[in-house]
Length: 533
Image (cartoon, rainbow, N blue to C red; front, top):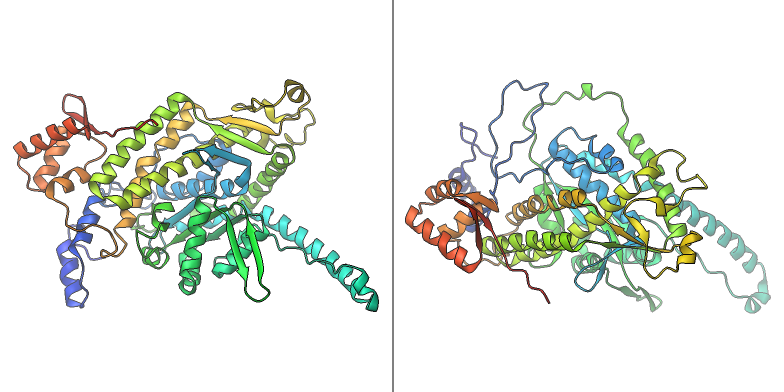
């Protein structure tokens, strides 16, 4: 990236150099990039190498607020060296753990059940620390290995049975031919064909996780079968039916619902091959996080000799014991929000939705609508982890006196008879999240929105359905945070050459329309209507 000597990006220089190179840039992209600057963010400094305070770097989406997440999750987050690394470990761990829970937990949202299956995309420059994301894959490997070991055992039995059947000679007609067992796996390779992914998912009852640290592994595969791949990913986000026909033997295969989770990381240049347009539906379904570049050398020797791969593998084996325990005793856990939490949820997303429509139009409104679904998914995983914290004490699950009903936040479903509850036969549970955890999950909404807005600017300008350059007024309000004061508005108005009188008129009209709410003397926040059906 070209920078002035003062360290700031020279946008004019970028356009000038692009023209010299024969590259035509759409200036609307520049505006879109500028609009993503809602809040300044200072990249993490390495205190062992930096003795002075670095100035804030603009146009970098903010990190997540710090919070004491459930202990099992906190252990993983704590292995990150920077705020951004800790954020991607949070998203990566929730994505992988949610994938392993799949059909076990459901959330009723928009008259449909959703499950904790996320599609997360970490975007970062090379050598920026995104490699830590690979550690979270280890959490799922014990489950994958167990499924593969079971398959190998069943396949061995099949070969023996098939050998006996082959030896029957003419008597074969009297005995049905043994059927080859389906290849069930949990971790699905990203360098797969669209048909191959479908087969893997259907064989595993719709369950699976694609986890790749280089997004081009997937985008290369998509290149040959983009429509097939893209269709599968979109359907899996909404748990739709999957099906295909084998042309060779005219065999029809299907599964009634899909529970695929996806965890990818890649450079900004790898975004466009995977998501060529904001309109194809994949953009809005991805949960994005854009890491800032690392601009200082970090001492790698002071990190100690702790092997992260082994550590996360140990945690994965611990997690598998809990998942096995859950699957043996519980069919489904229904996640609920309280009425107060629902009101807070709706208020939060109404503000974000209004801001998105004003600043970016349809693409970001679609993204906000699906961020809401993904926030519900994240909340369900966090609530479950908080509830079962006591189970991560060694040997807790092996205790014959233990009951999952002793976990706070979990309770028998209303339809379970009392005598079954007394006998410990409770196949259906209800799960609730405490207010502190819920507020922490909601605090992720605005950062995730801003990260998605930053990714939108990476897409081709001719694909983004914005027919004109934003007006100075639109640029002003898009650049402001969701809650701001009059001084912030005046400063942004000056940068956009908007007179104070014009600003005051805009503020007044937006209040009248309900787009803005005035909370106090000179304090404003974006608002939005909540429609109750």
